Image (cartoon, rainbow, N blue to C red; front, side, top):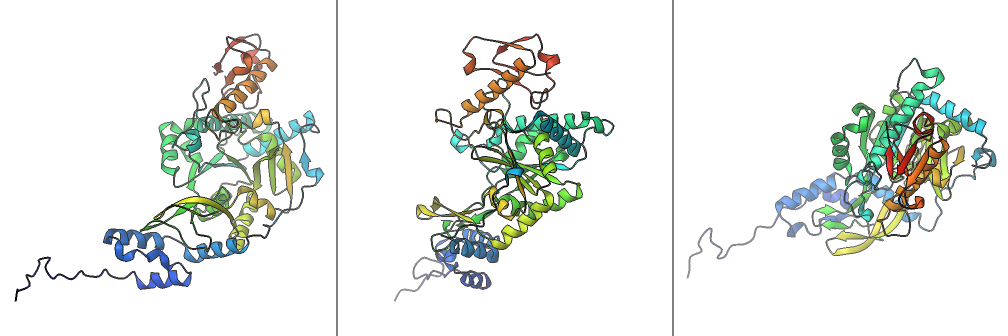
Length: 444
């Protein structure tokens, strides 16, 4: 009979792995999610640690409530707001120059008093544009080579200057507009680095606050977690409506209140013509005395809210816990599998608004989305660039300037730096009697 050799492979019995932490396993069972530990025996000790940390990072009661409420609401309409009365709709045709001037001045006054904050929704990558960078880093091909982030930052600088120059505010100097930028786990680090490397595009570093939108587990049709890897639950950003929960959990609603902010302008990063902190829209919003407003072109909105209303929305959406279900292909341990992403949308807030107003603007003046790569039929960098160049060309001609061009004018134009003019104002001294060769940038 052969002797067993201690330490050799002969006759060795594999030691079973330690079981998952009992308390955590019991919590998962309470919510029907114990399958997250299904491959526990087949993964390494390091992977087990990662899995435990991943599960512990989830707010399981909240996640379970969201899954149950959202799946349970299928087939039932989400809460809807009341139709906006005609008296709270300002159309382009009906708006008088006197009204616009009054709203412009009223908005500048509120900005000069530090009452406006701007929130940028910037969680998306430029994947459809052929870039893995945050979409705000994208250069649409303007003569200046400026990114979307830079265009928006310079519009904020321009509005700050206009507010400081307004009649009642000259003695106070420039009051910074605080810019809150919502990133996602996929864009946060790159966005911060981009701002630092570009020295915040002339803004003060302390007037920019970055915060991340949340993520939620991706689930199967029966509400079970989909595992991206044996040690990681598949997760996805919670939609642009995740703004409300993110502002609350980051305590930024309190931060806004401490700064004396009363009004919050919310917009998406991918509009090359967006009028950030538009004084006319703000003045209209204040004039109407509503809690929420949308600046609209056909089928598209930008948003303005009171800070008090944002607090109400954050609490209401969290209490109701109804998310939209988006069926998508989810990377999983079984390859790409069909599953559900849970998302809220920015317009979900309007169901909670006791009063709403709409402010219509012209698409060619204020809406040039950048969503698809060049070559697509619409919403490309090329189409957005041409819309901006054409708009600014109209500004130059209106200010008494002239254009020459070696290619057809409908294919080109001029770019005016936001630091020179926010919306076509104050260009006469720079343009009258002068000729500009398109394409070019007009800057100080």
